[in-house]
Image (cartoon, rainbow, N blue to C red; front, side, top):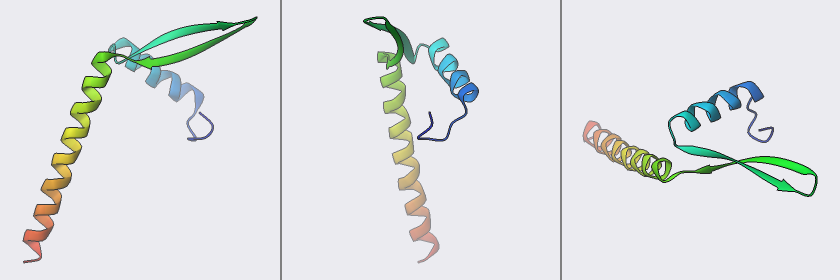
Length: 72
């Protein structure tokens, strides 16, 4: 949270949204007397991430083609 300069309340909103859409799941780890909350990506989250990467790659290819066409 601090390393990426994200406000705690904003981070919580994003985590809640991703959890509601079953893209991540919240897990509670207990070590000795401490309790820690961690988040893990779900299969649906992996699929969404892969689609996002494919779309981003396609958009980059389209933008590169557009730039080369403009400069010809």
